[in-house]
Image (cartoon, rainbow, N blue to C red; front, side, top):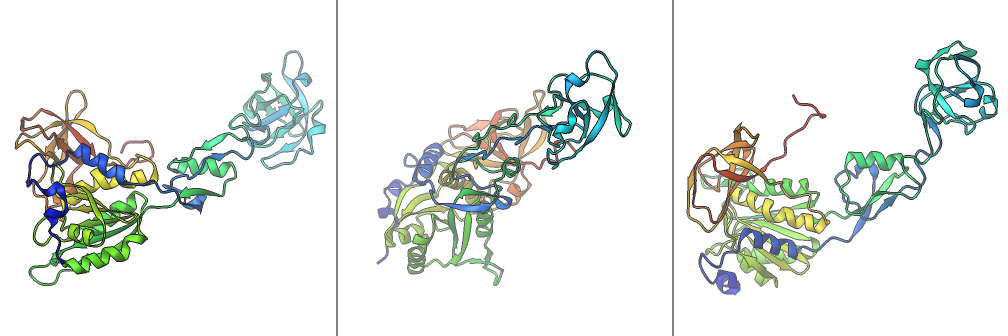
Length: 429
C-alpha cells in the first residue's frame, strides 16, 4: 500500500519556511543519532595508520632499555683522567650497537671505543665524543674532560616502564607507529570500522551511459570515496530504480548488516521520491528532515533497526555538501572522534551577492589573492547550480553565507572551509 510521504513525516507538514531546521540543529540531530562503535579488532602495526585505538597502550619496558652512547667516541671513568689534560689511555676494546657488556671489567684505567647506540658499561661515567680525541689505535689521546654523564642516554630517560604511549581514541599516524614499534608493539587493538552501504536511486541513473536520457551516476562513486576516506568499510549497493517495493525490499534486506545506509536521490517529497516511504514501509522511522541549507534542503535522518539511514539529495553538489556537514560527523561520532570535520577559517569575499534570507548557503570558491593581514580573498565559482561538480572540483574550499545574510559586497568577511592542501616534507615548493 503506498505511503503518503507528507503524512508520514510531520516535518513536511509545512511546505517551507519555519519548519526548516537550521544547519546547526541538523548537525546536532545527525550526530546524536550515531552510536559509538564498541567492537574492536587486532591489526598488525604496519596496517594501523588511520585507525582508532580501542584501548590505552603502555610501554612494556623503559626506553632506552639500557644506558647507551649518544655519540661515537670513547667511554671511560672520570677518575682515570685526573688533573688537567690531555690524557692518554689504552683502548680496552670496541663497543658497537648490539654488543654485549663482556668488556665492562676491562675499562678500569682504560677507555672503550664506542659507537652511537652501543651499551655503556655501568662503570663508565661519560663518553668523550670522537672529535675531542685522537684515536691512535691501541691508545687514545683525550683533549677535553667531559662532564659527569656526558653523551650517555640513561635507561628510562625517554619513557618509563608502564608509561602511557597512546590513549584510547587516538587516531594512529606514522609518528605513533614509530613510537609503538620502538616499544615492541607488533599489533594493536583498534575500533572496528563503521560498516556503511551506499545506494543511489533513480530510473535515469546508469554506471555507463546508454540512451539519450541516461545520466551517469555521479554520487555513488563520490560518496563511496568520501566514506572510505574517513575510515569506513563500504559496500556498494548499486542503483535502485524508482520503485517503492524494490526499495523497501532492499532496505529490509540490508538493515541488519550495516551501521549506516547512505542514499542519494529521492530524498524529497515528490511523486517519485520513494526513499522515505520505503523506510517507513520497512519498519523504520525518520527523526528529522528538511534543513535550511542551500544546496541540500531535502536531506533527512532516519533509522531502521540499529542502522542509521541518512538520505542525501540527488544533485551532486547537494550530496557533497550534505555529506561534509552531516555524514562526516556521524562517522566521526561512530568512531569517537571529531577529526573528520572540516576546519573553518576566515576569508574575504572577492564577490558580491544578493539573496533571500532563511537558508545557509555553501559556495565553491578559490583563492585569488590575500589581503594585507594575510587572509585569503576568494572568488565564487559556478552559477549556483547544485547539479554541477565542476566548480567544486576547481575550488580551494567552500565559503558560507549565513542564513540571515541577504547581501554583501566585495571585501565582506566570510567563513570558509579550505580543502586539504598537499604538504611536502616541511618545505615549500
